[in-house]
Image 1 (cartoon, rainbow, N blue to C red):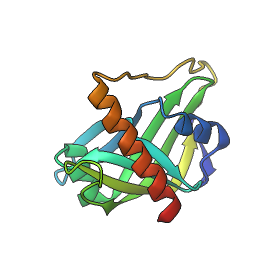
Image 2 (tube, helix red, strand yellow):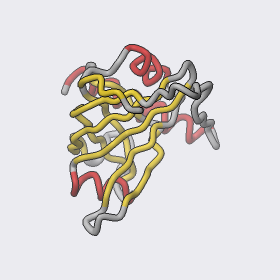
Image 3 (cartoon, helix red, strand yellow):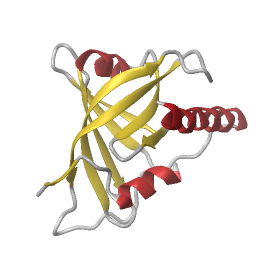
Length: 153
C-alpha cells in the first residue's frame, strides 16, 4: 500500500538519483488519454523538491509532458528504494546546450509516495551501460548540464 510522504525527496532516493546509474520511468498521458512510459536515465535533483531531466525533443513522453504538465516518475532500486513522484513539468531549456535534439525539463514535486511492499523487497533496479564511447561522452555532457542548471535555476 502506498504511503504519502510529502514533497521533499527522501534521503535514500536522493542518494540513488545522485549515483546516476538508475533508470526512472516517466509516465505521461496524451491529449487522447493514452498512457505512455519513457525510461529516463539522465536526471539530477534540483534541491529536494525538483528534478531536472534531459529528454529527446521528438519523444512521445516529451510531447505529452509539455502538453499535460502533470507527470509521474517511478523509481525502483537497491536497498528497497521504491517511490512514485507526482510532479508538474516545465521545459527550462530547449534545446539543450549539449545537443540540439535534447531538451531539459524541470519536474516540481507535488507529492511523493513510498511504494515499498510489506511482502517484498526491491533488491536492485534497472541498470544501463553505454553503447559506445560517443554515447558515454554525450551522457556525461548532458549530466554536467543538468548539474550546472541545478545550481543556477
